[in-house]
Image (cartoon, rainbow, N blue to C red; front, side, top):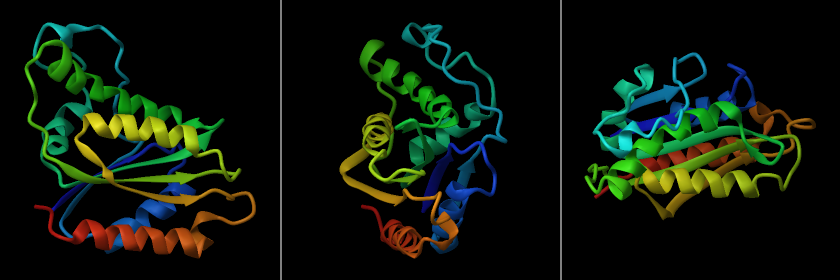
Amino acid sequence: MKTLIINGSSRIGGDTSALVDELVKHLEGEVKVLTVEDHIEPCNDCRDCWEEKGCTLEDDFTDIYPYLYECDNLVIASPVWFSALSGPSMNIGSRVQYIYASNHIRKDPIEVKRKKGAVIFVGAEPGTEEIPFKTARTMMKFMNVNRDELKVIKSMNTMELKACDDHVALNDAKEVAVWFNQTVE
């Protein structure tokens, strides 16, 4: 089993990482975690992928595309900033533009394995995760995550309760890992 986790937090070791770490602790198989420490440029809308196969940006995401295509599980983990996914999350997520262009503009579909998905949200204000959830769900659609197989882990009161102390969110992370570990057919 293979799991790709996009950790869009700019704070290594912060609240988002606490929930990602809890998820990873219970996952079986191979796990790749992308963070701000990876060199990943956002899509610059050059539109070369509208005409040619491949993305012209050469960075750490170049090696991630094949893993993304074949992984069984996908997670987008993000702090919620002003009721939106974080900038780093959007930068990484923008790279699925290549998949969209291949499938819908060039009509040269990329085979992307069907996968289970989860989103992890942390934030200071409960209820602000609705818009970022819609954005994450749209990104995941192009990475072939079934909308019916998308779980949410959230710790949305981090000014009062750090994610590492949020037993509900930590338990949800464990439960998602157990669900991911079930065989995907």
